[in-house]
Length: 319
Image (cartoon, rainbow, N blue to C red; front, side, top):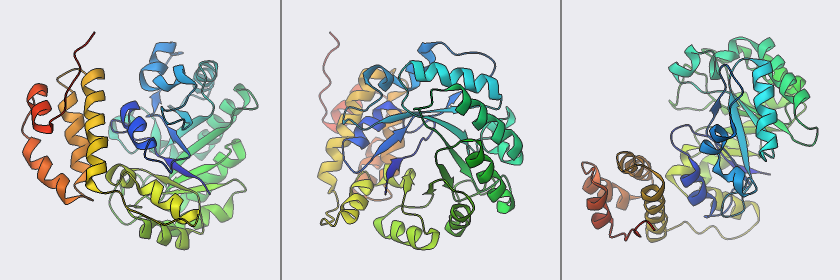
């Protein structure tokens, strides 16, 4: 059984990957998607979204990081996958699930679920191009506006050479609205001969148990649930290993939040850092009453130095 941290564009960047993987329980993580449009990207484009490539493709905690690509041109995706491998990517993941309208309009992400033949061609081209020892994997939704084609899409990916398939148990039209249709994950798992990971609406250990019971799938990819409850993977791993499950208290979460803020202050422009802090803190309000109180205090503040004082975090001056 494996527990993965999902790729979430605009949310799980290298800073949050670093913080969350240090909590424990995560077996591997995936970058935000790297969009492939019309050219071979330079190394700097990969390193901007996947700086871990310069450090053995692992987070500070030693958790392996995989590179995700998004696009619709099989040959271009193949060429860029080779580039990513040469930079050190240990696995190439392909995105067939992003529901964003701007992405879908440029023929990327979930819109490709309308074209299982193209999905097969993309996977096949990338699999053929990258070294044989580097796995090619994929992430999909159940469909664009209906799950009726989910089996055909999953088979296209598996037949094209995907080493496993992560299934976000909603359609593009569903967006992120509950429920997740875990029963469809079971149908996909029955239809393909490669491992299947379940994804979607797992916010607690109890949710994981229900997902596993309904889907019949043990492997899990955690997204917003893990961002909202940073020790969710650790809880699931403790249950898996027969250890006591001890939920993380708010005091420990605050240590993570403070570290996140220090890294955001160091790596991001002052105009962006406050928004990233409030984005994560806002998600933590789902699991921690203390986060609700702190979010109310900082939500209207945009000055980084004022936020330093409010959080009581000391920021080292740049050398």
